[in-house]
Amino acid sequence: MSKSKHQPIELLRYAGLFTWLCASIPLFLMRYWYETPLAMNQYVTWWVLHLIFGLTYWNQVRVLPVRSSLLYRLASVSLLTACALGISMLAETSLGGILLLIVAGLLPWMLAPVPAMSWLIGQNVLLVAVLSNIPDIAFKFAALTGGLFLGISLFAFMSGVVALRQNAARDELRKVNSELRATQALLEENTRIAERVRIARELHDLVGHHLTALTLNLEVATHLVEGKALEHVQQAHSLAKLLLVDVREVVSDMRDDDKVELASALRTLVEGVPEPRIHLNLPLELSMTDPLCAQVLLRCAQEMITNSVRHARAKNLWISLVPDENGIAMIARDDGRGVAEVEAGNGLKGMAERLRQLGGELKIETKPGAGFALRAWVPTT
Image 1: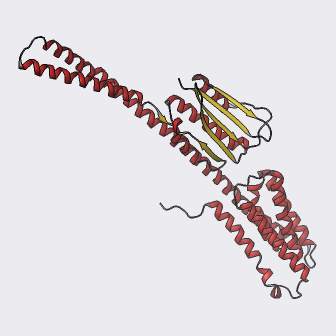
Image 2 (image 1 turned 120 degrees about the vertical axis):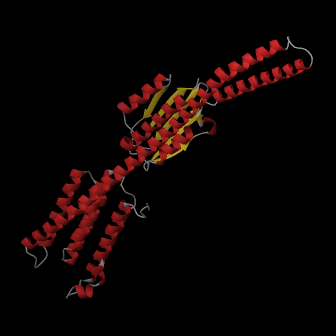
Image 3 (image 1 turned 30 degrees about the vertical axis):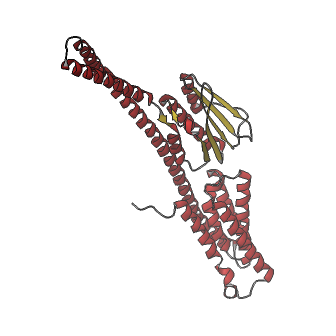
């Protein structure tokens, strides 16, 4: 199955840009558009408004969803609407209504549903007011035109809503998929360790037991035989003892190799998180961790990422593994908005409970405008 070259968000972005370019056609056909050409200052102002609209639109849709402040988004939408209405006023046509269609498709990404819908209705009411003040256009025709543009704008608005929800669903699916892959990696490591322990136990209990019995019997045989037979029995006794030592070393090595690759699981986890940008600091000596500790720390990392996405509105998240003399700490810090007082939800409570079960602890530091920092510590003994 081939992968699409452009994502739906990119198609929506370029569709708005194409509509803006189409709306600029009258600027190049002024001599055929009007019987009486516009004054030079009107023509220049029209060009300026059209260019401001295009630059403002492109600045907003370069990165979707828009994550700037509410005040900035309101200012941008206001500027777009004002440029569109100003063009209709200068051109004395409903040309600005076409640009308002672009605004309608952008509104779901800029404002919450109710304010966005209110803005959609308000800008079309203003369009009716502008058209009704144009000579030779009666109010009923202006209202009819405004109603038609409202209907088309609603279609563009709902298309934006669908694209926004599809984008959110895709991001959530990508995030869940990364979490499942990271969890699967740890489960595979745990399964590998369990199988090695089982094999080590079988070697110890069966092969080791029989080799010990064989060694004892050969020891007795050395006292019962003489001559050439004694030499062969002693050699067999030495080989049996060496084989027993080798089996014990293999069993010890298999039991000692009980660490899992936490760093790899963490890298898999962050692959599916498009926002915020996650920076990992995972020292090589800490990449291998006890299975139970690794599982708890992975769950803590998942909760840290979820908090940064849903609540902090952060652009960057830093996750580090830091050792101390008694354990290992996972420290996460974002550049989000922070809060004055932390209200622990189910996620933070679950994280603290998991850590307490291992004898660890959770510390939280945050304040408004200074981001959110978590320190999850677990003992390594």
